[in-house]
Length: 94
Image 1 (cartoon, rainbow, N blue to C red):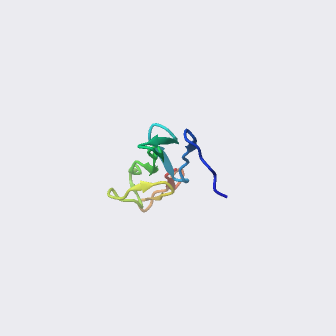
Image 2: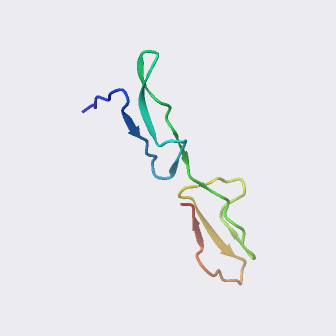
Image 3: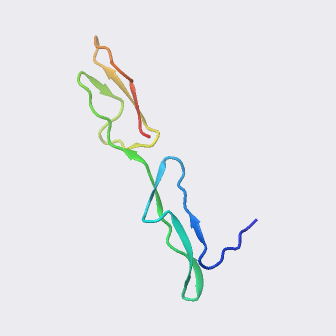
């Protein structure tokens, strides 16, 4: 069922999981422009990204420096032979 929006109506913009809203306002508004009802410009949803995973002494991770680490990306750490990892072996971008 379609809704009948009137001049001055507002609508909130919500981004999908893994994205964040970029822009000054999370809402749009129905405006009159050159005699026509139009919506104000939409804000943008940008993918959530994380900085590259940090290096660890005597070990490595599964990522690389050219890879973009985005929401949901998992990096796995391993140690050099003969050493044992202390703590979590994975890092999640969230």
